[in-house]
Image (cartoon, rainbow, N blue to C red; front, side):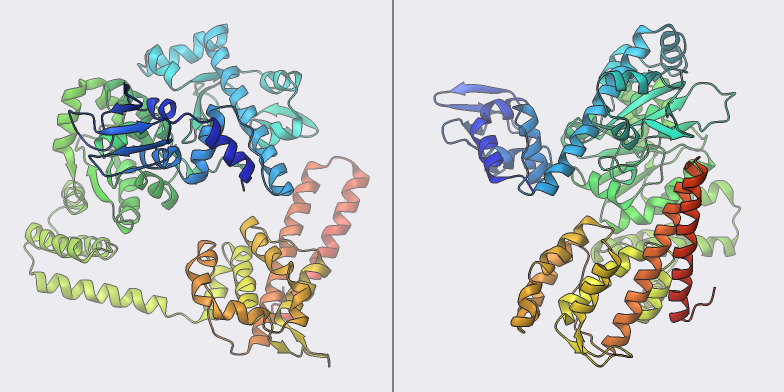
Length: 615
């Protein structure tokens, strides 16, 4: 959390007319400044900026506020992102209120510095080395048809064939090897470090404020067995499923046109930018995620899928349709019967021709699915019934009732089917969905063990504390009663456990700070019970934790949860030790690791027996 002193300094140093002037043209008008509204199309300036009051007002849209609200409205930043943007602009060092958060932030800054250094290092290798010019530039300019303006705008670079050039140069500059490893740019094997990116064209990936957070590398040696595309490994500042390539460069145009084209690859973004279509982003070659869809939604609700027209591109489009519809997005999909891709089309047409062509080739999801059917299947009634059922399943994902009704009408018209039949089938699909939701609580627990088990169990433990923390019960084989909170607290203390998610640990720490008052004040948890509604709707719900009121068999349920948590936690420790064993080359160290693995495995087996799992 940014300290109050830092926030005050940011507000006092920041110049509102200077910041807003970075985004729109302002002219002096007496004591104030005037400019055209960035939120509406107008010919007469209606936006007023007051340097004395440090506020702005846009009379055409009714929006206004201080410097932070402008960044939140215009750039779609969050409050914290706005503060960081201003701090970077005015060279203000961010101070955190809590010491441990400060050190974590310091680690983040080290990662940002390394990524920034790597960007300039790779750019230099592309333009100033013989290998970079003969291989990297030739690939980008001759094979991909990119000009130097686009190459510079997107800060493209090149990683040399050397195994250690980047790492050794970075170490000489003063960076630490542990930070280089965290950054995903340096690897480590058999006591030797090496560059993760070699013989690749490098695409820096920026966050919303323009900082480099990771890289994508495209190999240029087709004879190599390595992956065609390689992304940075994930770390504290780079999570592939939460970023979009090109969004930093495209966000203003997305806001201006209220439309976002979504493509699959890095070069698709570059080719379209060069052709004049700048409201385009890419999922960086990975499967589209909900977080990426929500990121686009911050800037526009209109999205056009612009994937390759081949079979794999069509399959990728089909996979994400329902995800996008669930988020109430206005979705259009481009369909090309000849299998064209964005890069090919960007080179084939001029900017105006390309826009006209894309307008003619974009369809809503019902027409898109119908065209796929017509391309790959004959007029088979059985296959057509499966197609209609698939379309109805997509319609069932749409939250808006009016939109669902309109899509039912469209389906009826396209397939010449009665609306009553379609509505009846849609109701059957919805009933089936509701049935799946009525699964027993314990069955959900067992299913979720296959994926994200620790995180799920952490939520359960915190939920138990919030609901029943002060509830007394007797453990099997003991005479002294204990409380739900005490049992969880002592288990974590005895085993030296820590929650895997920081957000969960923060909640637990907040409760533990009050543990001395629990015995003295029995109403401690009653306070949470009274405020259950406000917590579930505010603080805890943001963390994904719902506060319920069930307390059937609380003692057995608690012990079951704790046993499962211990098992999963120890399994995680075993996996860590196995990785340590694979990396370690010293024999005596390996023997110690083996003993630890055997001890942990025996402990896990004992816990599994208690859970009636004999392995």
